[in-house]
Length: 471
Image 1 (tube, rainbow, N blue to C red):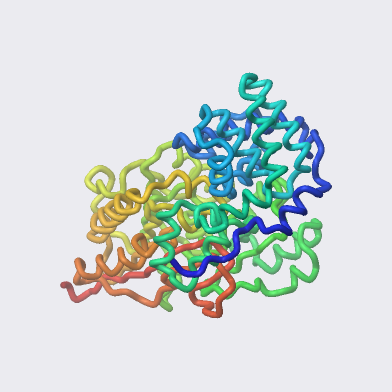
Image 2 (tube, helix red, strand yellow):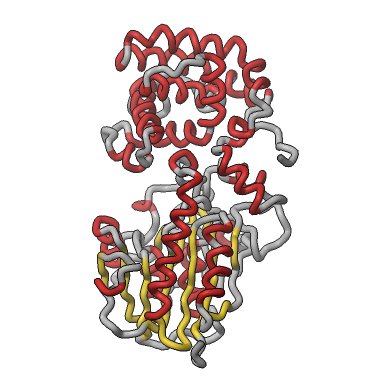
């Protein structure tokens, strides 16, 4: 293993956590902290049992959901550290919910969200309400952690899972794929992502929308006038980054379709497909958006050009979100609920001018937005996903006209789901040609290669064209 960076919870951060002014039993939300800790432990327990965090939070009472989400995000970003600490303090696994509460409290105690002693008191109160026999254990373990904090943290400094808060297999895979950048990728995953917007080109420019944000007090004059500061080959995309996230209802013209929320790297997809070869798709071109949900890329395609778009997704419930997005933006596409690889079930026999394939993947590039993903994925999932990606590519390629274009993308930083898939496909498809493409985009800014590193999510893009000469 390469030399490891210093674990994220240094002595300086430990001291700031203990002296934090952000404590208090009210937690900054409408509910007391102990109630939010119960909801957080529910969510963390669900994730550890294989449920997505979104599903777990959906089960929260509405009043508890914002606070539970904030706490569970913090906990899952520090779960490796918390698990290593808990193993030192309680070698035998407690009952699942008690363990989830203990892990949550340990993870939060490593941060600066709350005064440490207030956190302990509220965690004990949560245990009394939900699992009273375990309240003594919670109290004893957390108070021991406060007494022995420096020594306990020092003991786990050499543990990469505890230091980087990702599974060991994930860390090793990044080391193999990105030997110079793996630490920066892992550290970037711990950061809170920006809120990035896409102005609807049919309603106005990004520059004019920045002015509207400035007038609404959501963007400073200097930020509105400055360039994005992001070195991305965006091909006419112009992402707008807000310094702080806000409810979408506060965005000027959101309900009228003037703007959408979409990460900067994801905003590359539609421009690359529509304009990426130096010749734009003609009006009325038949375009397939495979695996379209939740619809951001579908909408962006229609904002950029007059296209005949079919939006396909295997999940009927997720497809509803595509329809909702299109309705808000005043756009229209044909939506079909079907498995993209089973073309006989949905294809009408007419070839497409262009295909956007945002293939199912590990989501390893969007971990900072979905901190549960790293703990839900298993190493064996990657090979299974690669087989699915190959199957969809193989099925869709015959549906593309000669001279047509296909954009393959995944929100993954693993080469097995990106460059490896395209290299293998080019060996199988003699009529496929790889055009100038961004390739892997890594969610880091510490390096000097603007073609591959960015402040957006981790993504992979490959633009393919079909030869008109046959195989």
